[in-house]
Image (cartoon, rainbow over all chains, first blue to last red; front, top):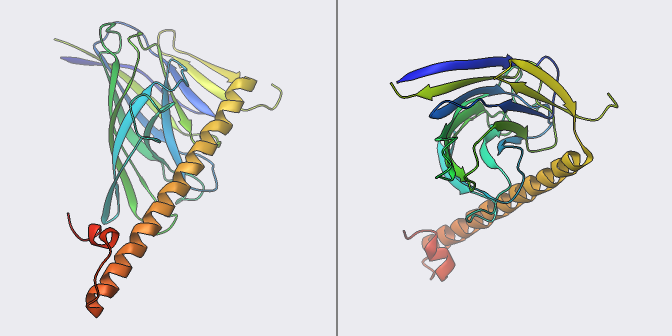
Length: 176
Length: 78
Protein backbone atom coordinates (compact mmCIF):
# COMPACT_ATOMS: atom_id res chain seq x y z
CA UNK A 1 0.00 0.00 0.00
CA UNK A 2 1.08 3.57 -0.53
CA UNK A 3 -0.14 6.97 0.47
CA UNK A 4 0.57 9.87 -1.85
CA UNK A 5 0.41 13.45 -0.62
CA UNK A 6 -1.68 15.25 -3.23
CA UNK A 7 -1.51 18.66 -1.65
CA UNK A 8 -1.65 20.81 1.44
CA UNK A 9 -3.31 24.20 1.44
CA UNK A 10 -3.98 27.01 3.86
CA UNK A 11 -6.61 29.72 3.67
CA UNK A 12 -4.94 33.11 3.23
CA UNK A 13 -8.19 34.98 3.93
CA UNK A 14 -11.66 34.02 5.22
CA UNK A 15 -13.92 32.02 2.94
CA UNK A 16 -17.44 30.58 3.14
CA UNK A 17 -16.15 27.19 2.09
CA UNK A 18 -13.08 25.25 1.00
CA UNK A 19 -13.44 22.98 -1.99
CA UNK A 20 -10.86 20.44 -3.12
CA UNK A 21 -10.83 19.13 -6.65
CA UNK A 22 -9.76 15.50 -6.41
CA UNK A 23 -7.69 13.78 -9.10
CA UNK A 24 -8.48 10.26 -10.24
CA UNK A 25 -6.14 7.29 -10.02
CA UNK A 26 -6.38 6.22 -6.38
CA UNK A 27 -8.38 3.68 -4.42
CA UNK A 28 -9.36 5.96 -1.54
CA UNK A 29 -8.93 9.60 -0.59
CA UNK A 30 -7.98 10.77 2.87
CA UNK A 31 -8.49 14.41 3.89
CA UNK A 32 -6.90 15.84 7.01
CA UNK A 33 -8.44 19.13 8.10
CA UNK A 34 -7.78 21.81 10.67
CA UNK A 35 -10.55 24.39 10.46
CA UNK A 36 -12.02 27.24 12.46
CA UNK A 37 -15.09 29.40 11.79
CA UNK A 38 -15.85 32.99 12.75
CA UNK A 39 -19.40 32.47 13.98
CA UNK A 40 -20.19 34.05 17.34
CA UNK A 41 -22.00 30.93 18.51
CA UNK A 42 -21.39 27.21 18.39
CA UNK A 43 -21.14 25.97 14.85
CA UNK A 44 -20.91 22.66 13.08
CA UNK A 45 -18.96 21.51 10.08
CA UNK A 46 -20.37 19.72 7.11
CA UNK A 47 -19.15 18.26 3.84
CA UNK A 48 -20.64 18.23 0.37
CA UNK A 49 -19.59 16.05 -2.54
CA UNK A 50 -19.29 17.34 -6.09
CA UNK A 51 -21.09 20.48 -4.95
CA UNK A 52 -24.35 18.60 -4.46
CA UNK A 53 -26.85 19.97 -1.93
CA UNK A 54 -29.53 17.44 -2.86
CA UNK A 55 -31.12 15.33 -0.15
CA UNK A 56 -29.07 12.28 -0.98
CA UNK A 57 -26.76 12.06 2.02
CA UNK A 58 -27.08 9.81 5.06
CA UNK A 59 -24.91 9.93 8.14
CA UNK A 60 -24.63 9.05 11.78
CA UNK A 61 -22.30 10.30 14.45
CA UNK A 62 -21.35 9.32 17.95
CA UNK A 63 -20.49 12.41 19.92
CA UNK A 64 -18.57 12.65 23.15
CA UNK A 65 -18.68 15.84 25.16
CA UNK A 66 -16.51 15.86 28.25
CA UNK A 67 -17.66 13.13 30.60
CA UNK A 68 -21.01 12.67 28.83
CA UNK A 69 -21.46 10.48 25.78
CA UNK A 70 -24.38 11.15 23.51
CA UNK A 71 -25.29 9.92 20.08
CA UNK A 72 -27.09 11.88 17.44
CA UNK A 73 -27.97 11.18 13.85
CA UNK A 74 -28.99 13.00 10.70
CA UNK A 75 -31.67 15.61 10.77
CA UNK A 76 -34.97 13.79 10.30
CA UNK A 77 -32.72 10.76 10.61
CA UNK A 78 -33.39 8.49 7.71
CA UNK A 79 -31.89 7.33 4.48
CA UNK A 80 -31.07 10.04 1.98
CA UNK A 81 -32.72 12.81 3.94
CA UNK A 82 -29.75 15.06 4.55
CA UNK A 83 -28.22 17.64 2.23
CA UNK A 84 -24.68 17.10 3.53
CA UNK A 85 -22.48 14.98 5.79
CA UNK A 86 -22.10 16.29 9.33
CA UNK A 87 -18.46 15.73 10.20
CA UNK A 88 -18.26 17.49 13.53
CA UNK A 89 -18.52 20.67 15.49
CA UNK A 90 -16.58 23.67 14.33
CA UNK A 91 -14.32 25.73 16.56
CA UNK A 92 -15.54 29.32 16.32
CA UNK A 93 -15.29 32.74 17.88
CA UNK A 94 -17.37 31.35 20.74
CA UNK A 95 -14.66 28.86 21.64
CA UNK A 96 -11.12 29.29 22.90
CA UNK A 97 -8.86 31.48 20.79
CA UNK A 98 -6.54 29.75 18.36
CA UNK A 99 -8.44 26.51 18.76
CA UNK A 100 -9.18 24.54 15.58
CA UNK A 101 -11.37 21.58 14.79
CA UNK A 102 -9.07 18.85 13.59
CA UNK A 103 -10.05 15.65 11.87
CA UNK A 104 -9.65 13.02 9.21
CA UNK A 105 -12.18 12.12 6.53
CA UNK A 106 -11.76 9.00 4.41
CA UNK A 107 -13.60 8.58 1.13
CA UNK A 108 -13.68 4.91 0.13
CA UNK A 109 -13.65 3.75 -3.48
CA UNK A 110 -14.34 7.29 -4.59
CA UNK A 111 -14.14 6.51 -8.28
CA UNK A 112 -15.85 3.12 -8.31
CA UNK A 113 -19.04 3.48 -10.33
CA UNK A 114 -20.49 0.25 -8.90
CA UNK A 115 -20.94 1.66 -5.42
CA UNK A 116 -22.58 4.54 -3.66
CA UNK A 117 -19.89 6.54 -1.92
CA UNK A 118 -19.04 5.73 1.69
CA UNK A 119 -17.17 7.86 4.21
CA UNK A 120 -15.70 7.55 7.67
CA UNK A 121 -14.49 10.43 9.84
CA UNK A 122 -13.23 11.52 13.22
CA UNK A 123 -12.95 15.07 14.51
CA UNK A 124 -12.51 16.95 17.75
CA UNK A 125 -12.33 20.42 19.19
CA UNK A 126 -12.23 22.16 22.52
CA UNK A 127 -15.66 23.48 23.37
CA UNK A 128 -15.61 26.38 25.75
CA UNK A 129 -19.16 27.52 25.01
CA UNK A 130 -20.64 26.16 28.20
CA UNK A 131 -18.24 23.99 30.11
CA UNK A 132 -14.81 23.95 28.53
CA UNK A 133 -15.17 20.34 27.43
CA UNK A 134 -13.62 18.70 24.43
CA UNK A 135 -16.11 17.45 21.89
CA UNK A 136 -15.18 14.43 19.85
CA UNK A 137 -17.15 13.07 16.91
CA UNK A 138 -16.88 9.65 15.31
CA UNK A 139 -19.02 9.29 12.25
CA UNK A 140 -19.83 7.52 9.05
CA UNK A 141 -22.16 8.02 6.17
CA UNK A 142 -22.65 7.90 2.47
CA UNK A 143 -23.53 9.95 -0.56
CA UNK A 144 -26.17 8.10 -2.53
CA UNK A 145 -24.55 8.38 -5.92
CA UNK A 146 -22.41 6.12 -8.07
CA UNK A 147 -20.74 9.13 -9.70
CA UNK A 148 -17.00 9.53 -9.35
CA UNK A 149 -16.10 12.00 -6.65
CA UNK A 150 -14.34 14.95 -8.21
CA UNK A 151 -14.60 17.45 -5.37
CA UNK A 152 -15.04 17.54 -1.61
CA UNK A 153 -15.96 20.77 0.17
CA UNK A 154 -16.08 21.86 3.81
CA UNK A 155 -18.69 24.36 5.04
CA UNK A 156 -19.59 25.98 8.35
CA UNK A 157 -23.26 25.42 9.10
CA UNK A 158 -24.09 28.66 10.82
CA UNK A 159 -23.53 30.92 7.83
CA UNK A 160 -20.08 31.99 8.94
CA UNK A 161 -16.70 31.96 7.25
CA UNK A 162 -13.77 29.63 7.73
CA UNK A 163 -10.96 31.79 9.07
CA UNK A 164 -7.55 32.44 7.53
CA UNK A 165 -5.07 29.82 8.66
CA UNK A 166 -7.52 26.94 8.20
CA UNK A 167 -5.80 24.07 6.42
CA UNK A 168 -6.62 20.93 4.49
CA UNK A 169 -4.32 18.18 3.29
CA UNK A 170 -5.31 15.49 0.81
CA UNK A 171 -3.78 12.04 0.32
CA UNK A 172 -4.44 9.32 -2.18
CA UNK A 173 -4.28 5.66 -1.19
CA UNK A 174 -3.25 2.97 -3.63
CA UNK A 175 -2.77 -0.76 -3.32
CA UNK A 176 0.77 -2.07 -3.35
CA UNK B 1 -15.22 41.25 -6.33
CA UNK B 2 -18.57 42.64 -5.25
CA UNK B 3 -18.35 41.94 -1.54
CA UNK B 4 -20.26 38.68 -1.76
CA UNK B 5 -18.98 35.72 0.27
CA UNK B 6 -16.36 33.66 -1.52
CA UNK B 7 -15.34 30.05 -1.72
CA UNK B 8 -11.79 28.84 -2.25
CA UNK B 9 -11.27 26.00 -4.68
CA UNK B 10 -8.04 24.01 -4.66
CA UNK B 11 -7.31 21.87 -7.66
CA UNK B 12 -4.85 19.15 -6.70
CA UNK B 13 -4.39 18.06 -10.28
CA UNK B 14 -3.06 21.43 -11.42
CA UNK B 15 -2.00 22.75 -8.00
CA UNK B 16 -3.96 25.94 -8.47
CA UNK B 17 -6.13 27.95 -6.11
CA UNK B 18 -9.16 29.92 -7.26
CA UNK B 19 -11.26 32.34 -5.22
CA UNK B 20 -14.83 32.48 -6.50
CA UNK B 21 -17.75 34.63 -5.36
CA UNK B 22 -20.75 32.60 -4.29
CA UNK B 23 -23.74 32.58 -6.60
CA UNK B 24 -27.12 33.78 -5.37
CA UNK B 25 -28.21 30.14 -5.23
CA UNK B 26 -25.23 29.23 -3.06
CA UNK B 27 -25.92 32.14 -0.72
CA UNK B 28 -29.55 31.05 -0.47
CA UNK B 29 -28.36 27.52 0.34
CA UNK B 30 -26.26 28.89 3.21
CA UNK B 31 -29.41 30.40 4.72
CA UNK B 32 -31.25 27.10 4.31
CA UNK B 33 -28.38 25.25 6.01
CA UNK B 34 -28.25 27.75 8.85
CA UNK B 35 -32.00 27.51 9.48
CA UNK B 36 -31.86 23.72 9.50
CA UNK B 37 -28.94 23.72 11.93
CA UNK B 38 -30.62 26.14 14.33
CA UNK B 39 -33.85 24.15 14.20
CA UNK B 40 -31.94 20.95 14.96
CA UNK B 41 -30.16 22.59 17.88
CA UNK B 42 -33.47 23.81 19.30
CA UNK B 43 -35.04 20.38 18.87
CA UNK B 44 -32.14 18.69 20.65
CA UNK B 45 -32.23 21.23 23.48
CA UNK B 46 -35.95 20.69 23.98
CA UNK B 47 -35.55 16.91 23.97
CA UNK B 48 -32.72 17.10 26.51
CA UNK B 49 -34.74 19.41 28.78
CA UNK B 50 -37.80 17.15 28.58
CA UNK B 51 -35.72 14.07 29.46
CA UNK B 52 -34.09 15.86 32.39
CA UNK B 53 -37.50 16.94 33.70
CA UNK B 54 -38.82 13.39 33.47
CA UNK B 55 -35.78 12.04 35.34
CA UNK B 56 -36.15 14.67 38.06
CA UNK B 57 -39.82 13.85 38.43
CA UNK B 58 -39.12 10.11 38.55
CA UNK B 59 -36.44 10.59 41.19
CA UNK B 60 -38.71 12.74 43.35
CA UNK B 61 -41.52 10.19 43.14
CA UNK B 62 -39.21 7.29 43.98
CA UNK B 63 -37.96 9.11 47.07
CA UNK B 64 -41.54 9.89 48.10
CA UNK B 65 -42.70 6.35 47.39
CA UNK B 66 -45.18 7.42 44.75
CA UNK B 67 -46.02 5.50 41.55
CA UNK B 68 -44.26 6.58 38.35
CA UNK B 69 -45.87 7.24 35.01
CA UNK B 70 -44.82 5.00 32.11
CA UNK B 71 -42.78 7.86 30.64
CA UNK B 72 -40.97 8.38 33.93
CA UNK B 73 -40.29 4.66 34.29
CA UNK B 74 -38.84 4.59 30.77
CA UNK B 75 -36.10 6.96 31.91
CA UNK B 76 -34.98 4.41 34.50
CA UNK B 77 -35.50 1.05 32.79
CA UNK B 78 -33.37 -0.06 29.87
